[in-house]
Image (cartoon, rainbow, N blue to C red; front, side):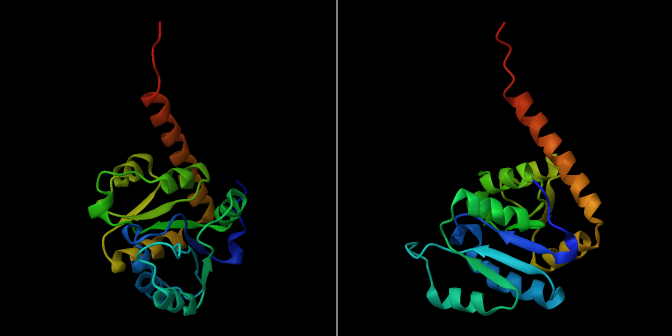
Length: 184
């Protein structure tokens, strides 16, 4: 995937089927902290479906009113998702570790495939993959998010690209080893 020119700013993406267990209701406070510390960062959030039993129009309105927040439709075509990935410099995965303790993340795999680093909560089932493949960073608190983001923003874009090239190699090797069967 062709990455955008970093002079256009830094974009954090929260893609996928946003639900309460995926940290949707943490986004407002995280975004508020991020945008206070890093006002030029842009945050793009794929919205929660209105049919979701936890959907909250007032929360959505508050989220949409934050500066530098773009709220996309909840349901996107594959082409639109790819367009979001092409703009992203980082994918934020604030998944609830109590729910995702033994679960993976398809978004994490897509991030690696698109060579976009992730920032995810410690304790999620895929945190070990993030460490093993070096595909991003982990956090526990909002303060950790800000500290990680400060380091990420200070990184040379080429270093971020190299990190993700290595992560992609590690990811592919892991799957090749896991699914290599000797049929002779």
